[in-house]
Image (cartoon, rainbow, N blue to C red; front, side, top):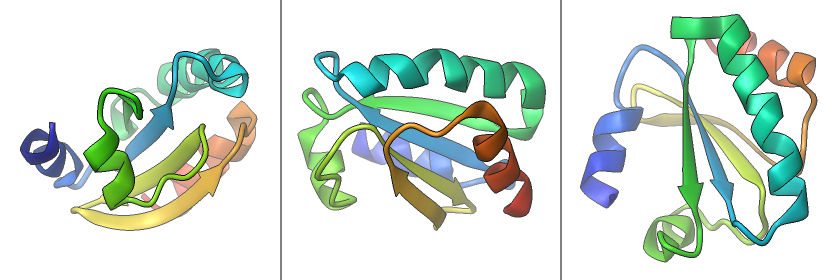
Length: 99
């Protein structure tokens, strides 16, 4: 996943990465919100979900200590980071700030 991840975040289109775990309640709440964000923004955003349990080295690289943790990348550069659940409009606003 690591080499593939670098390819995913390297581009003009912002990439929202959601570090999650299957056992995490807030992660389950965030999932439908991310689907709504993708439905509204379409090709303006890529959303990638990364399971911390099966991708521990990647989670460690980005110092993910709690889930859900979201990171926003563009051209391989991290632009934003936050842990916890955000509502759809908050996420859209943050993404629009970094287009």
